[in-house]
Image (cartoon, rainbow, N blue to C red; front, side, top):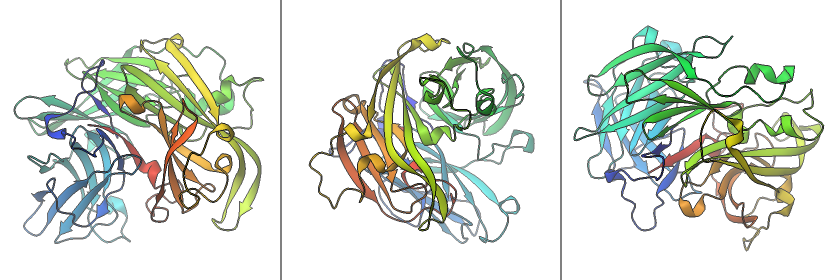
Length: 428
């Protein structure tokens, strides 16, 4: 998923993204769409074939509630829930498989759609299938670069690593909405990020030795592909040269704690522990950390888990965005045990103490007045089917709001948290 910022000094709204009273200027979008019709002013249709038609609608909510994409298919059935791959301004790129659930996905028809959720002129376009050598894989994060102009053309971009040994050679896969064609080119990092300032333990090398993109965002004239444990690769999207430059992210807290890293610890998924945003003219990063007790077997979820004793939120700010680690300034760290619950009723809150919750997928508020708010998915333990969204004000150390999320763990993500953690920041 991507975040759109129209220039590095200020966020601007798309003309189609006017925010009415009661709506937020940014949204959290569920990665998995809801199957069905929800007709509103954003509804658009696309005739895929004589027998099949797709319609899409966006239902917006103010964070911490997630917004939802609704997708309906006439004349065929989805093999699984459609998935949103990226959103910038009012553009949403989503993907569907058509066919029976029991069939292997590689054997099913696969379609990419670009949906414009503009209430004044909604549209839905079927993208041509890319050639096999330019295939955009679903597990490679995709960026959207709106090019503006009267025709509102855009570029879809995916960057795939080609050379893990050195970590500086990539294939840039591009779709041009004006020519309706796919293309690809190989790029090397012309201005790499600074070398690690410390030695990296062997058990962390598989994640830190090369760039593993976990998300992407659009900033000014660039798209940034983010490895949340390592750094950002910015690609110039306006020049035909498409140069790449690296901006490092702060080292994982496990590597910088007193006494050094524990050789038995693993970093895990970057998206579970970290979040990034460009807001207030700065690049901002957040990381959640845990203090856990011994692993126990959870009879309710059927999985081993660690009992959480406490957790922390740490934030950093970067005003320069050069290739140096020194650009980052730590704003501070707060512990869950020091966070004030506020005036929320017991019925709103999780049934266990705040500091014992399993929290994940931190998201930084995108408005100037909530840039110090971090949104977290909270569960009683890892993979528990019930989840809450906590909005934590890191300045006041207070739970600003809490929302219980409906529904069990998503079937599409059986090994990961899947309600709010499949949402991402969308700037409008």
